[in-house]
Image (tube, rainbow, N blue to C red; front, side, top):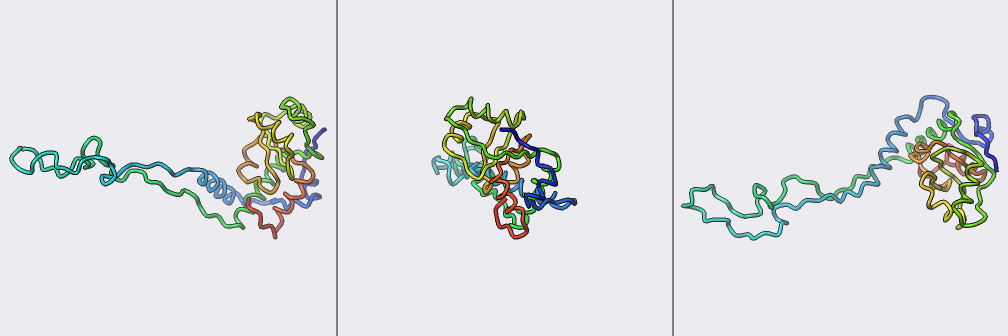
Length: 209
């Protein structure tokens, strides 16, 4: 099951709308930053003086001790007290327009094709649920260390055979994103997936990159 390098001529024949000029670099940056920001849990949290579990009693009486006045033990100046301006749960996600996402996806795919990093294959099917079988088929297509395998869909045998291979990621043509296109040494695409990628790079595409 050999793979062929997808060159510019073959990409245009497959109706992939490639970017030939310098457009899209900023869009790629914005989309990758947004994708990574969306993965942040934003769960970092500290307790304020109102939330710490301490007594509300004064540590000592107001006058006559010679020490400074103190109103409560949960004050931020005390050990174990509340935290001033500490991190609070927040949403790190960023909004990116559909047009920008499409442009970024188109740019990323174009750059990988021009670099000769995109390979095409008729289909990718593993006959049995076995990691060894999966790797055997993959190595016939490419010997790259990190591979992104894109197909229109994956059957159970292929998905389960690949789940223990950390250097390979499976992605459907409708779900693969800009960050994934940039993160792997080689991209292996099936013929049916190539048709979907062509749809996503077209001017009328509304897919999320």
